[in-house]
Image (cartoon, rainbow, N blue to C red):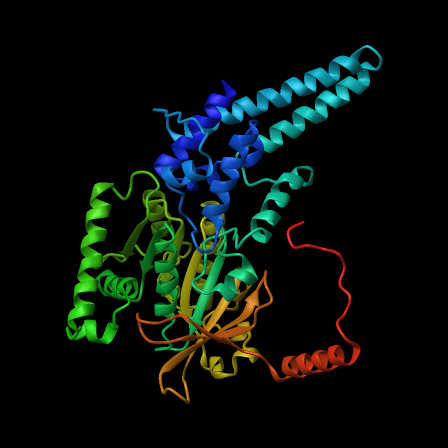
Length: 456
């Protein structure tokens, strides 16, 4: 029975192309008791979390190529149903093992048997409750799997950033993260936020953009331009060349066909929704309205453009008073934690944001210091001109990051067409240290390294 359920779950994942649901239900490779089934799940999981194939599941033909002896076992049950069955099967095995151990203890030392039983029941219960609570005793499987996922081949543990340098530093965007992107007016900070959203969408995620600054139609045009990589200014003025015109509308037509085939509010399928507070609706536009939209759409990533313009639900007002902005910031962080979804808030910077990227600090955030206190990562966007090409480039600085050590790097800044990584920023001190290390190494010869392989 257990082996059959394992096969049904594996084939359901492959056929539905949905490992996202299994991730949320916290089904890991340890739930698979048959060695071959465990190997298949490990293969699917590594493919799903690989930075180059993130969010996708291998096709049935590809799986059969790697595992030709895997019996095809279809099921009419849903993924959550099969996941619950495999969890019950795994718990049953654990309980039987505990009973077997206790049988040998109960005659010689019944109190030892009681303690064994109590500890075992507590461990099994805590491991299989679907909550965010974690105990140190359960760290082994969780951290071992995560470590080898990252070390064993370009794995990341969250939604991928568009820039590999940032994925290496943070391992992606994680559930519950509250990330703030800020910059001076016209610094293209909204374009940066939307390019992150489009990259997540292309990775198979559901993205919700909650726009307070622009009407949804304008945001939609930017998103479409980023998706098709066409010149935004030429799109605005209806001056696309023939190739870009064909590519732009062909992509949008295909997306329309794909999303009409599967309702975007039913099940986990990639989708991109742009929402606003509504024309003339003074009561909407607060965090509570955003929460209602999250419940309805069930996104994997939320982007709030113009978070400082949101209504303060606590005071029932819309103002840029620092107390109201502090409330909005706190409520957005609470929302990210409550709904287990990352939220990216886009806001303004004060005039101090003109300083060099390596000297950036959270004092540059306008309206409220609370934003810097609440966010897990702050990204400062600064636009400048490349002295050689005369094209725009954007410096992304990271003055407030709870995880990661990255300080700044440069990306291209051509609206919609190119936001690719350009170069890392190295300080004078780092250059001097690198020069010193090189000189020391050349004088002393190759240093001896311990016998250690990455991923072991």
